[in-house]
Length: 136
Image 1 (spheres, helix red, strand yellow):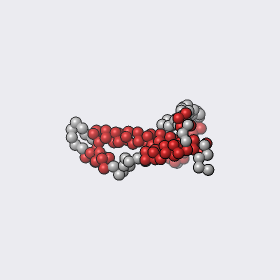
Image 2: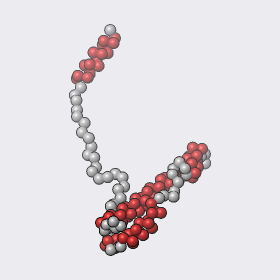
Image 3: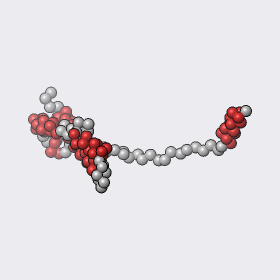
Image 4: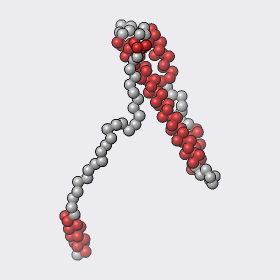
């Protein structure tokens, strides 16, 4: 009998409530994350010979790669994480480790942006090389 009364009460509440449609907040159309601008070849790039374009691409190749260790391979990040977990200094209390992790993330973001810029310069030079029909 008690279950029946609870069920009837639930059904009454479900049908007596007014239904309202939820409106979603406006979603920004602009990108949230960093999007690098597309590098367009300038006049100096257009005037390069095929040999000069190849030489410029070859000079940019070492800058395509990062020499910063990844998060899990960086021993300083491991030490900062350990410092956060076991720090008992009254004033610092783990903030030093958190500060270093933030700095490490900032350096990694700067490195990623640098790599993107180099990749785009190389792709702009490769487009010029294709437009000139080099080495066909």
